[in-house]
Image (cartoon, rainbow, N blue to C red):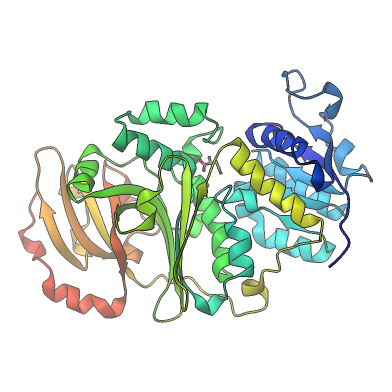
Amino acid sequence: MGSEKTLVIGMFGFGVVGEGLYKVLKQTPSLKASIKKVCIKNTQKKRNAPADLFTSNPDDLLYDPEINVIVEVINDSAAGYEIVTTALNNGKDVVSASKKMLSEHLPELIALQEKTGKSLLYEASACASIPVIRNLEEYYDNDLLHSIKAIVNGSTNFILTKMFEEELNFKEALLLAQQLGFAESDPTLDIEGFDAANKWVLLLTHSYGIDTTIQDMLFNGITQISPIDAEVAQSRNQSIKLVAQAKKLQNGKVASFLLPQFVDQADQLYFVKNEYNGVVIETGFADKQFFYGKGAGSFPTASAVLSDIAALRYGYRYEYKKRNQQQPAELSDSYNLRVFISFESLANVPKEEFTSIEEWHSGNERSYLIGTIPYQSLIHKDWWKTNNNSLILMPNNIVENSEVSELKKMSLSLAGLDV
Ligand code: HSE
């Protein structure tokens, strides 16, 4: 084992996570890590820490030779990128919680980590308190990982729980998520799925060695979900959750998407409520494993930053084994999804694109159908999230091409569907 080094930290940001880390570090003296300076934008704002801790000049941290660790917990991704790259280039290890920045620049940052020989750790950037990145990185071999599905955004899970179980309306639930420090400063990032998509980019790299971007991801948030969707869920004893999923297909490629989903009670994710996150991993030999913990909030997120700081004492760095040493998996665009679509007008649903339709309900204000549709009919298209359409995935939603002909035989005739 290498000798443990003393860590002198320069921290960027003193918001929900930064202040949480400051408090948590004070309660962890055994760690031999102390914050020397904190860089903030607004020096006028009153802070719960001594005034001489703060500066507004990034160079006071980035060019201080005594500081050997930069912790970056700000929400400006362009500034975050500048800070993280300068810090690595200046020979400092970095811990970041900036999922958006990391998702936008991961391949460059991996290359820079390699070039500088320093560590860039970011456990707090996905699922906050759940140690999912280090687990995926160290424990699961590419070939053994059959599938991973997860709730990765605390705010949306909190909102859906409050709406469906405590009858708050969307606005009230979002406001509460903001007040409790779960939501992003721009909450559209949460409710429209961007935050979860950024996290999923990172988890795909660590689970399957895949480099991708949110621009190439099939995703949505929770803003289209309508009361009738909730009624359908209730009548089936299911809940609706925003779930990210990746699964190895028969051809070895990976199906990946992040969409609202009906979750039934046999699924571990059904019991993930409020700001909690959950990850279900299926492997060749261990079958199912379930990770559960707080996915947002000051101390849960700070706990993951703290764990990364602790790991730096013995020089831990991600090796990106699946990406760099093994054959990375490829994303597939050739499979089908079993979906529920509710809509005001069938004219806004391209029914001819469905491979099969298994259920159809006509209502006064909204109707819905359940059917199977090629992934290609959804990716880079927006009919399913515009014109008041709402798409929710069914449980067991991936239908491989080899299974489609059977479905076609069972399908209802599309010809009979009239507006
Ligand atoms: N806004 C994020 C969430 C914070 O709700 O999950 C944690 O990343």
